[in-house]
Amino acid sequence: MTLLYVIDASVAARFLLTEDLSDKAGLVLEDFMNGLIALAAPELMIYKTGNTLWKAFKQGLINMEKAKEKISQLLDLNIRFIELDGDDHESIMDWSTENSATYYDGAYVVASEKAGGALLTADDILYEKAGARITAVHLKDY
Image (tube, rainbow, N blue to C red):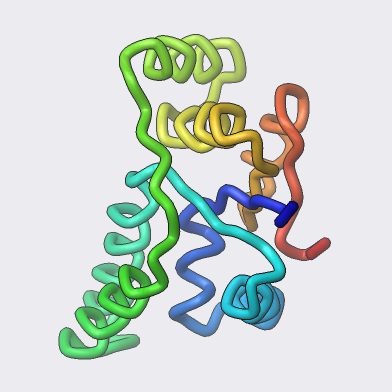
């Protein structure tokens, strides 16, 4: 059985932009492309990664053509999307409230739980808070 990682935008952005831990993200991507691991995410990941690309454009780090190219590259990876339903959103609200965390972070935690995969993140705060409920792996430890 292939190991499943549910990734957040902090990992996906490092597939596309050079940041700290981009080398580790490259290893994740390589393992995914070679079929050694499976990747999934709530659809939110695309929007948050797109926002990161938009910010990179606004900061003059990449041009608009490159931003569009990079979001297309991410979509072309065909990472499986985890659909979250009404009950899941109630769980997200509960977890986020209990952990003083964002609703976005709660979505990654609940998606990981629903999919039965480990959450892979480069977000220190999400990593710490998620670990009490699910298996969480920090990108630096991949």
